[in-house]
Length: 267
Image (cartoon, rainbow, N blue to C red; front, side, top):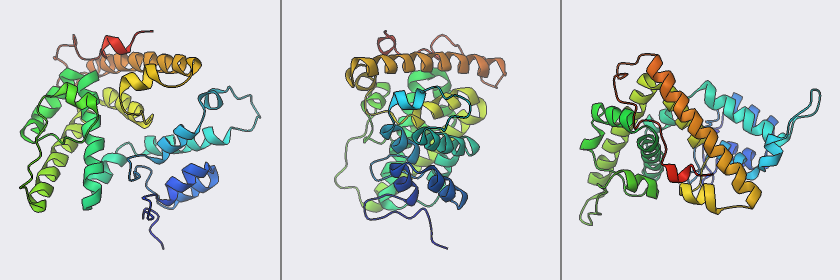
């Protein structure tokens, strides 16, 4: 049986191509036969991210009447979301598998971005998880979005004398540390982790300012502002739930834990 997760010359798997065509039957068939929903393209896009980018917000949010045929684009997104929910560790599991050299940077991009957003939205929880995972003892990967740089001033200068073997070992150590950070977050702060899952599955483009304030028509910008307000509410609820469920870190101060920067929350 052919490996459904192999990539073509352009870096796409069969599931990526099905997502581009937005064919729900093909997507479901591929998933049932073992296609990996977390597999990323060469430029870091997931199948669900591809579908979201190709689907207009008004088409996805259209209220469906009982008996009415579902929108095909929305159906594709729903199928992929269900698969992600069924296996919430899918992306992280993919990172722990043997890494090819050309995939290593892509995996690091995902993990660095995830941890950077965790530090932005849940600074106290992220700090504890990173301390226990000893992530601070590894060097941060520099090829990440600006938000990561804003949360840490320890980006590493490029060493031109570093051998490929040494570089690979260093990057793998960073992957292991970030993986441990994510695992601790899922274990002790599950609701906060679910918010991050949802946030990253939306496949946000580079830069929160660009996403919420500077792109699209006036109506599209209004929808994006509403989406961020919903996300802010999810963040606050997630912290409250994790605190109420009494995780071992529940004694942490919540004063800074779940409030995204106010400049992004302006209406």
